[in-house]
Length: 116
Image 1 (tube, rainbow, N blue to C red):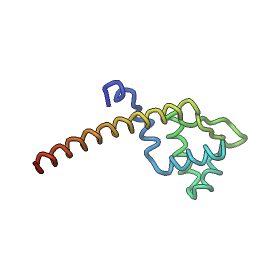
Image 2 (image 1 turned 90 degrees about the horizontal axis):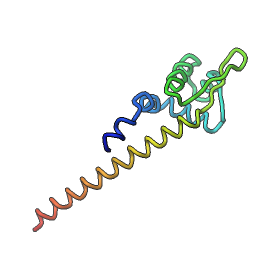
Image 3 (image 1 turned 30 degrees about the vertical axis):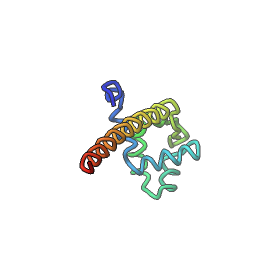
Image 4 (image 1 turned 45 degrees about the horizontal axis):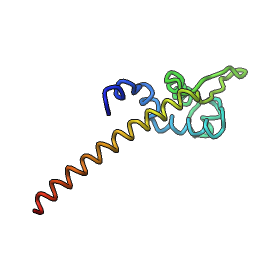
């Protein structure tokens, strides 16, 4: 990964999607299109307060946007930020794939040298 890629990686974004519960919330929102803390909490079998906390993290990272819906907020995926997250994951994945290929070549060269 080059310096530009490292600088472009958003730590808040990675922290937000690093939590399994928040990833399940994102999955639910992608499937359903939208949800409230109450509906997501029921779906994921966690408290409404826990759900609201996780949604706050996702909102601060820009992955979800909230709009008022009566006494609650309705959360939706922010398509632009989600696309940015996917691009970052893809970039980092490609960089690690390249590193692993280099490590494999080095290991194969060492093995070949030991066999000769």
